[in-house]
Length: 140
Image (cartoon, one colour):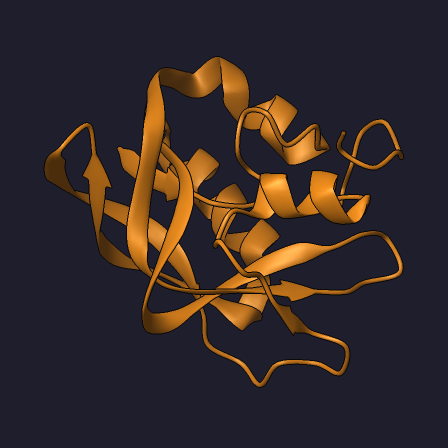
């Protein structure tokens, strides 16, 4: 399965779910998709919301070996605020069809637009902690 990861599931995110997903990833490369990236606050850390838009969202395109149970676990992790859908990612100068999670709920109070569309960069730059961070510290 090809997945575009742009938040807490990216291999470098330092989260428990990224740690769970990492051994299932066969290939990974930098990629981007069309869309606006919004940072959503939570008492347990920040997570991103991908919304339609003309900007670019940067992340990681992966090919992962996932069972149906694995995909169901990812869907549960993303919850009802996200919908898994088909996306077109740009990676190494080519367009790739993949799955990804797009925000489908109203944005909560405190959500902010991420200039540059790169969640991991934003966390480090703003000295914020990712939701589900296994270290409990900000990503720097």
